[in-house]
Length: 112
Image (cartoon, rainbow, N blue to C red; front, side, top):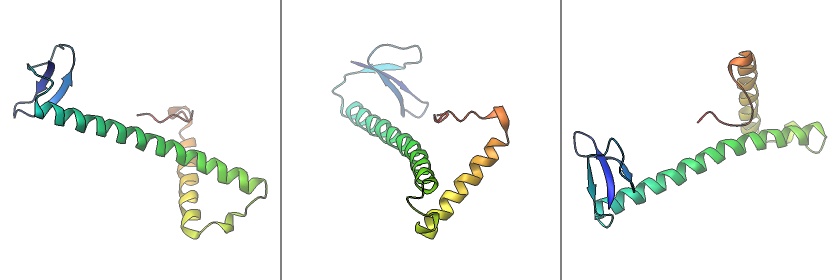
């Protein structure tokens, strides 16, 4: 059995293996709707994890380009113009965040 919370239109909001306070009913885990919801939820979780790691990797790439340029291993102008524009936009955005002082921490972790 799985424990399910549905909204007023009958849409599944949450499925758990243990009872929880907001649950509205229980359903066999083998139910096709539950199997579909659980598969969809797992896919969504994996995609969100991948998106999060993509955003972290962007920062790694920014730092890598900065190190390579500062050590003279590549020239900034060696990068395609579109890449330079994107990097410049991120540097500018990061500088604007820096102007906020302690309101925004930049510890390498995303806030979500």
